[in-house]
Length: 187
Image (tube, rainbow, N blue to C red; front, top):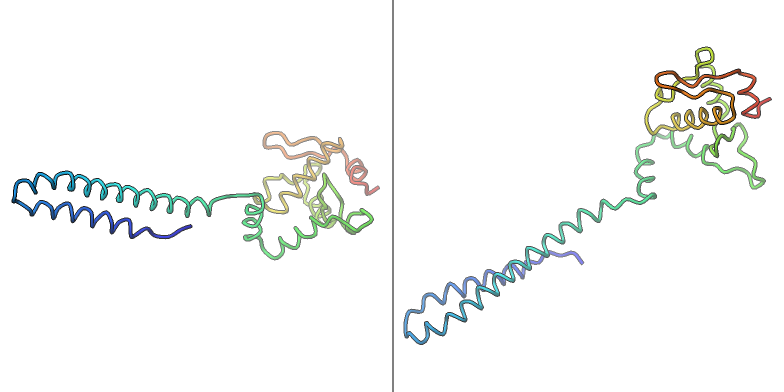
């Protein structure tokens, strides 16, 4: 339960003031002697109340800071979705569509490594290729849907033997376009 522990601070101040007030008594001697243990108790209680107030204030602050920083997969996903544009969200929705109850992928998409990539996107990606060199994955923004599509498509084509993997600054290279079409199930 979070609340500010002001009473503990006030208690510490009161104990300290009472301890200081005991120094005003100068006589009789027996009373001054008896006040030393009382002074020690008052200052000790004040010190302990102050320490307790500091401890609880720090714990409250730490709890407030760290409680908001707890990251789960769901909170990370929500944070990523927060910054996506409407177009990106629409593409994501289309990508994550599992399919009809029959288990078929959505129409107009090709399933590559468990990701449904729109056929239009694949065709555009192939049209942007320079000869047999596919567009490099780094062309797309980090964390974008396009980068996810490109990465999945390139790794899929390499696994199927239709392309050679990217190496250094050289992009993924298609072995032959008929092999790519066959690997994607288009022919």
